[in-house]
Length: 375
Image 1 (tube, rainbow, N blue to C red):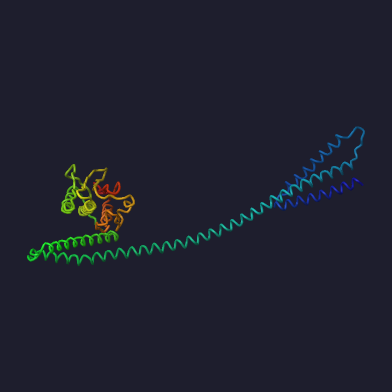
Image 2: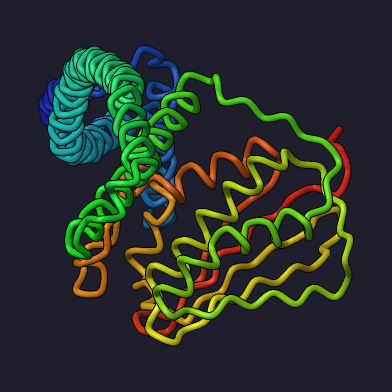
């Protein structure tokens, strides 16, 4: 009776254990169950052999083995072991699978969020690109209109300026002009000076417009750079004398050949000399020097003037830029000279740059020109 109860109870426990294992299989989503069944059978055989060995070991001599009782005990014990093992595995797997499902759910939510975020980024990026393209288009259109306005304004400005010049020439040729008082003659001289400023402004505006439209003509050829520099110095001598600035140029040789447009080089030199004189101090100096560097000739114009701050140096060659400080407040200018000079240097395959230690320490502007025709 006890054997039947043991076997029956062991069978029930074993069936319950199998149910626990099946539940574990389902929770763990294990499709290949063969390995788990082998583990289960191996546990049963292991405990069976252990129990049988133990039972035979403790038997005394002469005792007869009650096999039904032994089988019942073994079956009941193995069932209990399997039950405890399966319950422990079930609890562990349940906890692990709970966290695993939470992680899977979080992963799916994160993937969905990433997809939505990617779509949103693509949409926003597309909109930003459209806005950027429209902004660039508007900027180009504004720049085109500005360049066109400068070109038209410069052309329209030349006609009345030329008329003023002709009228002044006619006045100077009239003998009665010489009878005017010194004050009135000085007024005519001021008018002549302002006329020249307007002519220079109109020419600068036209040059800027030509550069922007790609119509700025450069006709390079072999020229003697020393001659061109001397011509520029000669034309600026009166201005330098009036502002009490001394110009120095002592070349080591009389001939220095470069491949450049002589008129454009002269314009460049006039711009740099004019700035060196205009932004200088009383009794200051402007020193011109030339040197050969590989396949280029370097021309430097160094002044002892007001100098420039580092933040001003960054924009020195920008169009219409003029440094605004206490040193330049009373000095007139358009902010186009250095911009045009830089463009000329580039069109002749040269470079230009400026250096200044700071305010009140002067400025040195250097440009290069090729010795031979660039390939």
